[in-house]
Image (cartoon, rainbow, N blue to C red; front, side):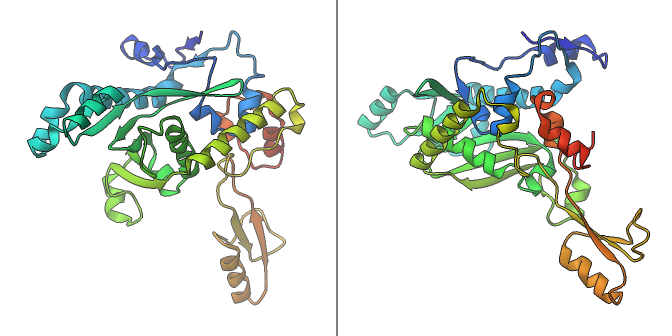
Length: 330
């Protein structure tokens, strides 16, 4: 059972909200969201002894905000979709075609009566047995065969396509688990930004122009997803009891490593502060050429940040090496 420490003295009215975990955990299964995490994190996080450790309550805010939005969307569709769609201007003939979480039998009955229905599924969990593992996943929303995932996140995540590969893997596993429900080859990510700025939207063309943004991503095929799942489970088996140093290192993508910076120093003898920083090596060397070849260009590797949030932090030597070489600043 998780325990929390109210380090920031959150008022009880909010503290109870942050301390309640309504996620339907099942220790006997491996979830889609776990399966797409780095192998090193999956294996080492199980070696960390958290007995007696408390979680700072304030750290639960992002998770609980996301859950609250998910719960609100589900309740709106379950309780008030018809009146909401009417106020949005949808014709009654479309509203009448909606079916919420229909059973296969209900869909067959509609088909027998010639009803052209639009099935909507919300927060449905499915699981599939693969060897000794039970793989499970609960999608957010499926409308007319297309899976959608609601992401409460920063604008940075969307602008830099930080998690697109993970989104595709997650959506593909949902289709693999629910091929009769998820029938489209694409998924929709519905970003709900927590830090959106109207001023930045007006000033920057590449900045999200609305607080909500949709992104369409192509899913992997079901056979391709099946191979991914089985390969990842085999890797987990292979390294579950392996020495820590033999477990494959996290990649730069896994580490959320930022782009490198190319620093130009006009005086090679003084490298405490660069003359100018560049995003690309080409730009830096153009500047060096403009200065008649006088000076020095040094590449500073991008910083990593994922380690700061990793549950395997205390058991991982890779993070120690990253700290030592200056790539991870705590």
